[in-house]
Image 1 (cartoon, rainbow, N blue to C red):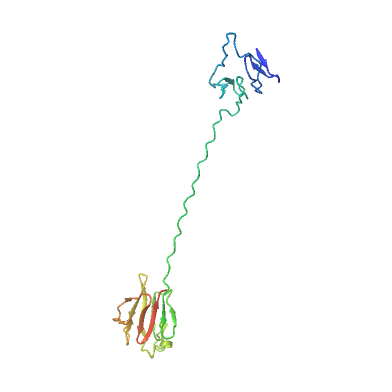
Image 2: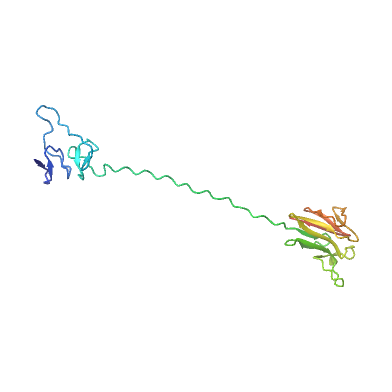
Amino acid sequence: MTVKCSLGHDNPDGSAFCDECGEPLNTPTVADTGTPVAPAAAPAVGGTQTCPSCGAANPAGEAFCSNCGVSLLGASMPAAAPAAPVSAAPTPAPVSAPVAMQARLIVEADNQEFDLGGKDNITIGREDAVSNIYPDIDLTPHGGEEGGVSRFHARLFLENGQYMVEDENSTNFTFVNRQRLAPKTPTQLHDNDELRLGRVLLRFKTA
């Protein structure tokens, strides 16, 4: 025996609500003994689904519970778990490039400046075309001949990133901060050191 709702949907005898539209059905809910008739709860097995509100068993695919009328759509769909935040990858620290030494020699008498950058070996003296001597730094125009500068007087060179000066057996000697250098003895130069070849005074600068 079936019970029809106002829209004509067939429902099992004893249903309190329509399986299709959820309309309440005018069926008795109290037996002759006066005891409320409780719906039989059954687990959702095979072709049935359990109402999440009252526990009544309903045919699989029904839109509403036939006992209490609660919607069965999406009742068994689990809630979506929140997505875990994605942490940004750390930004690598910038790597600084090594700074090349910007060394130069300055003639004290006339402020003539000689850039030493890009050279590992620099000769200092006076140019002499007859003897085929052409030093990297020619002090002839800066009082070199009058000041006793030899044609091949001294040599500057880089060693382990540091500038060194060496006297090349000059006639009137080489001095660093008024200290006379022994011939062929390399001596390290520092920023603002005084370098004297004969009587010509120069200043070594790295900044």
